[in-house]
Length: 229
Image (tube, rainbow, N blue to C red; front, side, top):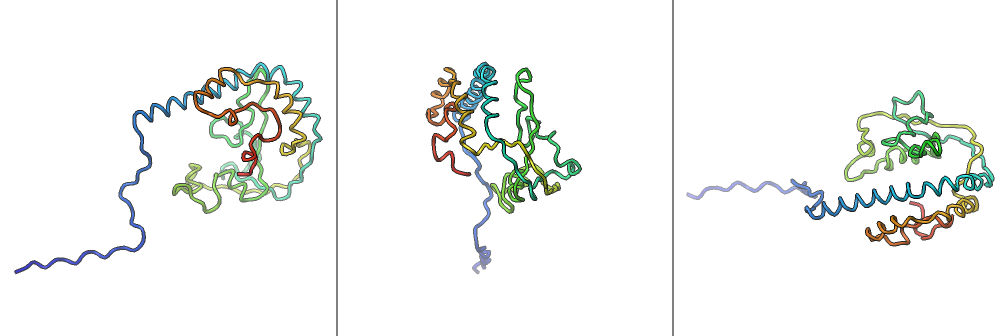
């Protein structure tokens, strides 16, 4: 007597979930190469910063004079937006968090040598809600990055945040989007040459000279670099 076979399970429509997802593939050789490249990039950053310190000190009066030659502009803030974590809602315009090197938002000046210049408070205020959310969470509303929500990507999953509207007037603003204002500054920075050690590291990393240059002009060398992201 033949044994009766059970009918096969019904097939599910649509893509089937994978039991194992390969995130990356690497070898011992590729890990060693990546480590070497990372070390070279860190060394390149150190050389570019520290080897030009003497030039920055020497040119400081000229750079400040070039900045002051620009005509300051005034900005009216009408419903501009700042997004903060809920626990900071009572002090939404505080600049304290912006001065932290690791994990701070919109850092400015904290890496300066205190014997040369002092850090200045920096505060990010967006022109609209979507821009503020992008600055806070790095993603558009409803957008995912490799399956991660914007809260998960910012390591704030399950937390709350506050959206605040700012009204006011800011005077004495230096317009960094105006080439005519930046050109006098670029002329002073043109006097700073790339250190020889930085050129050697750039060559070792196979970085094209056009992709790593010192400032020579307020205009972009490559038009693609001027395009908005």
